[in-house]
Length: 401
Image (cartoon, rainbow, N blue to C red; front, side, top):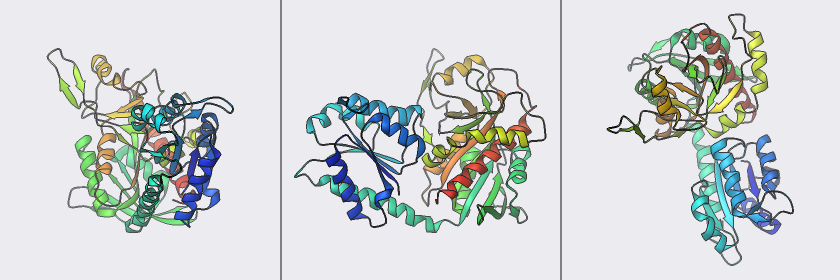
């Protein structure tokens, strides 16, 4: 477990660090990093993934500057909303000042899991840290109930699943038809010299409902530790180019809500997120895409593929109308892509009752949703999304997950 403590008060850092080390013998001093200002925290977060970050409510932007609540809130927004820093799994606010707690609670609590009052004579924060560490350890212990290491799901058999099978080069058993109508292929894949149990599947029809249903079945049947969806998606010409790889850090059903008498959609989106560790890893592999593109022998887009992390919204049908696109594009300023399945996958994972797999949707832009449609690069886009997913899995396993 990796932890980051961000505070300009060294005595508070030492107190938290000492408490953590006394509560969990599996955590060593080297597992706990520290930063004393927002600038230093951003640098550290850009290089390392952390399970937990403790963040002071009052923080200076840089060394020797005044500590304010606005700086901490802005750092949180950069981490959570903008994605400019790697997002830890859990963010815990903390302060030694009860006045600061009251003043900044409303803004802070919407972005952090909780806020601890750490002050002499008050020990409630120690109980909270103990509960937090127990939560993470229980989650780690639950991994022993996973049956498969990796599950790959695509919407289409050709070209999406075929690209995965060709790229991943797993040793597969003959395909089986599950009672629920899903074709699956089980096998073994060598990752970093270690054999991993894998299962590949594709939907029997496209769309949100089919994706959610298939995801639920695969989780129940195979209990995978990782679940990835690859394939093709639509993008927007002011954000992406054909061939760019989209890592969907979050997704929602853009159609959810109520249409009023004026023909306006009152959105009621329920955002579901990808696994933070997968999103973090994806930031480290963009330089690989040029190599992946050079290795492909088929029809390649004119531009070098880029890796873009951002929201990918889903809907039950393909939308070509510019007027309809204006409606769902207004729901989030960083929206980069649209498909028919991502939200269904994330929704099913979020609601699973058993061991929860790490999940990520990685798709490549095969057409621009605000331009004329073309099938020229579907095979390439299927390939590069599959190749990117494999690289993320390799890095995930190299990090010891």
